[in-house]
Length: 286
Length: 286
Image 1 (cartoon, chains in turn brown, cyan):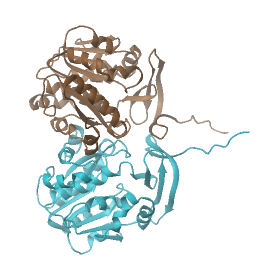
Image 2 (cartoon, chains in turn yellow, brown; image 1 turned 135 degrees about the vertical axis):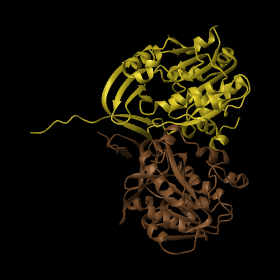
Image 3 (cartoon, helix red, strand yellow; image 1 turned 180 degrees about the vertical axis):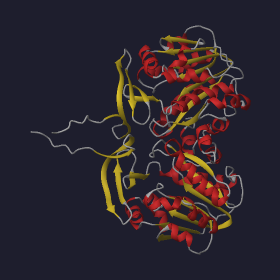
Image 4 (cartoon, chains in turn orange, brown; image 1 turned 90 degrees about the horizontal axis):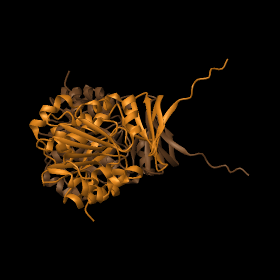
């Protein structure tokens, strides 16, 4: 007469064996192992579906709009009329979806090293991946570092939507890559890259800023809130081929986009570049 | 020949049985049960000492500076010359510590309902609680709602450093309390209150704003990052007895404080009032 209740399942992401987050899982939708990494999609009780790579949470349906709006609209409202956009990584399709909201955009090339990420997203994360079926999108399953190093048509914006600076993504944080990015940008072109977080990874942020400054002469960090990444306060690095104030968007262009956005607005754009005092001090060039 | 390793101990804070955070514990320093709540202080591996009330994390040594700077310096750099400051709750002493950094401040009254919180902080959290020994500080162990309802000398700023809007702290989120706050403020006076978070508690934020607006005519939310509270993006509610733009601090006063601060600066003050689009839409008065 004992009832055998199924055990609760949780996804846990623990940092340094010392602190972490967890989410209760309703269902495991996909588990695979590619040449590069493990890829999982789970359905959670509270945050919709989540994509995990090597056990680290990449995106959740509940808050992916924040990350994807902030990586795309900050550079694309600074560029006067972006036509060609390159996304490196970002196989879930969310960054592509946001780039396509800009009416001047004619082409978005997505270069994702791991076809399993794109396949899993197409099957289980339609809210982001359905953007990949748009006629303006070209999906290439190849190494983004090699793609940048090759000759090719230039881009108005390069969005480096990468995982953390180790494993498959490590070269995306290096100087050779950023020299190539600069070469492949148009005169008004901009680059934005996932840049970790200041509470736990300030040294890594300083290192990436140094690399981007080395290529572009100057670079800035801007912040956003991530519900499901450690610490909640996360950053992007941004640089422009032509010197400009990155904190001031084209307000008319923002206003035209606004009805379709849930996090980004002109006030958030400006505010994102205001850094907490400990970040400013910790990022001083050494 | 088996070795009996001690089991790992973790503090977990789980929301709605569905998601949460956890921290590995080195040592439990204090565990008590007062007339109001359970009170614990633990030493963690990664975040220093943490104060927990009813199992919910209140403050960690690693990031308490963010919360305490943001609750204190936003109102105190808006007031032209704050002399008398009232802190309701905040028995750990961190908010008092920040208020005392303003050279015009002559008196800080701390009204904390639970003497056990103050006692535990004095023994185990000297980084915040040592401020309570300052000669300008008066510590009163009593009900903040009753204290506000009584007659007494007015204050230039009231800082409502409370737990969540249930249990002992629930009346601190009600209209009677805010009518009393307004009555006890000087003509240039301001109030700021802990106001939950927009990702998970937007309805509660709207409710608090409605209450504060009911008393003061207008009220604003401003945001900060909390490393150890769910979601990372958290808010304070602010209102002023005299209409003014709450987003513009006195830059000279901020500059004088700056060497002693780690999160707050003039850019962060202005940026904190820029709300994400989903917050703006969700907080529209109904």
